[in-house]
Length: 186
Image (cartoon, rainbow, N blue to C red; front, side, top):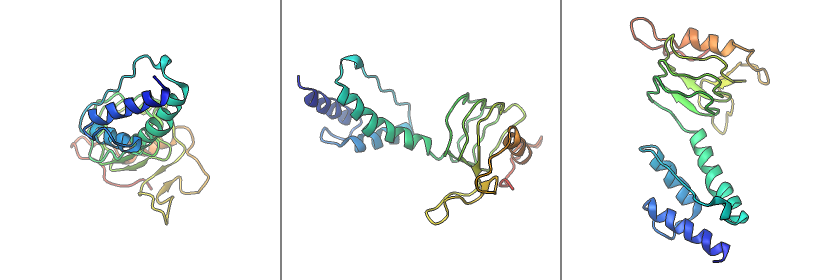
């Protein structure tokens, strides 16, 4: 079977499996997979990848996987309860952590550069060792102002090792009363 026909067959099959119909475009399929991921676990298994044509692999990565990964990376984790979650080595750069509970979560070696952080709830059990970051935001970027609430404030300056963890621990720690901090980082 010709490689173009094989790839079209796979996209028709995947479009049907995500309830879009068999004539969906690759970006529509990627968007639907992302929407499903918001409410349930999504598992994609590609068998015999080594038998797929190289052009199809490039199409899969370029048109499906990279847009899907970008949406996931830029996801808003608004009012998410990630308490006790193992986020070790996760790439949360550009993620929107709004009213996010990370009580006892493992953020060791997590990438937070460019993340938007507001109302971040944590406890002394939240692991921040080795968090990788250069800067964060405390306000959502817009087209008119791409760097609002950038910390450190001086454009081009990056946090020194350990500096972000200290700021987060000071401003966003859950007190013994169980209340969360609601201040943005100054």
